[in-house]
Length: 187
Image (cartoon, rainbow, N blue to C red):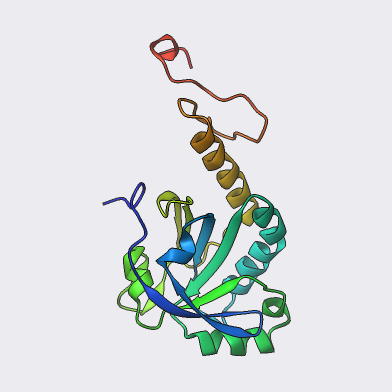
């Protein structure tokens, strides 16, 4: 079953952000756009490159009214230790959520049960807490955060312009489509 169009399930988790431990719930994913990025584990190889790439896009995403949350099955304590010991992870200023109970990984259907780790899953959640976009990658395939920026812009456009849709490779300011009988078979 797809999670597209479903509301984020209830949860409570501990997180690390900017030298502090925080409690995060599903309510944090409401009222603004949220980008939730699951990754397998701290102190690994592809993961820090992805998290750094997200940090590089963080100001742009905040400018679009979006907040970033990274999640692994590590604890918030492990996130702090990684943040303190890695030059790459020290740059991160967004929230890093710990999921040692696997609640979030199960809620978002990214848990690799046999390993106790999460797949590389990216979820875009609208201000109502509804999942609008999902990308799942195998462990060895890193993601490109600039694509998340484009997806947020498209999701916001569609939300703000009922009756219009964004075609493939759509960029902000480009033409959109208005589905109608007149377009059938003409695209």
